[in-house]
Length: 353
Ligand code: NAD
Ligand code: IPM
Ligand code: MN
Image (tube, rainbow, N blue to C red; front, side):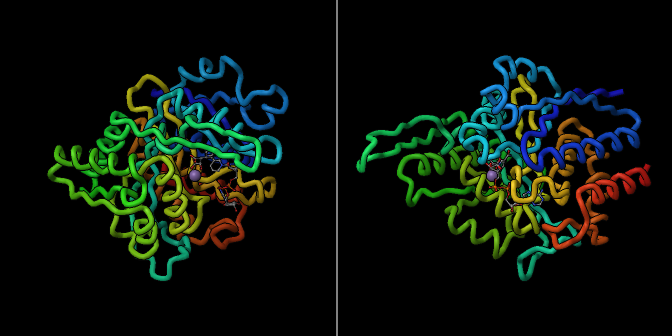
């Protein structure tokens, strides 16, 4: 019996609705699998926790989490209670960095039955490999002059090690897929980091002659996500470009509520973390209508991570059977609740046993 010890952090807002839903699904997965079981330990780290304790997680929070096989996180952020840069840097970004989850994998593909806003959605199936530890998300900079001359300086850090690492990850992934890597650049307008990014791409590409390489400026690339998303296989992007592209990827899939993601620790020293692309969705929190598919598909990525691709594949095909049959939440134009969609997925999963 393979026993996986998972730290669950629902976080804020709809994280508290979709994480329990996905955990129920994972429990059903272990029932039909037989050889796999999950042991969840729940952590209350969130903006509410901050209000009570003055911190997003306790001083020994990282020590408490570091020996788990994985972290399963919902979303962080409740700007009404805590400024976003405090809550996010105190929990989500802290975990990504301290646990060296340097790669963020974010697939985007069409599920049948989900209406896409594209007029002619051709089948697309792409993966954005987002650099997850540096780039534009850096705490180097400062603010000066509290008067009309006030300035804010925000530096971006692009290390050769980090840039090469994300590119190699993208090329290795492309080798197993359709052998195409598109790099998101902006070397026409950003003077230092992006020409460097392009140079590293060229160097790395030499080691992958079997992979077709292409480089596009982020503005044109974003437009192409809308006009020809089926042209992409693996897209490698910096931290910020990857962030923006993946909400766009989610939008063409039909809703940010279904897009999955995985923050991968590649050196095996710390747990990887599984959390969907979407945030805490304060506008729909408490209504029971959050789409649970992003979190459930994220659970499927966690199964893949633990070499359980077979049951992961079954889970995704069950998810798709529900969308195909029109069992959709409001964000996808349907009328079903979080609980109803989850129950339907579980019933269909058990029927596959
Ligand atoms: P958001 O993703 O929370 O919401 C954007 C829109 O998508 C909203 O209209 C929301 O209702 C909708 N939406 C999102 N997930 C949905 C779901 N599962 N089902 C149905 N509709 C869904 O983005 P935002 O409004 O920019 O951010 C809200 C908060 O979440 C902020 O505090 C932000 O910093 C935080 N955030 C956290 C994460 C994370 O923890 N991974 C990611 C993004 C944003
Ligand atoms: C995401 C989110 C985060 C990011 C925010 C909340 C800091 O948008 O996971 O996509 O930008 O990485
Ligand atoms: Mn984002």
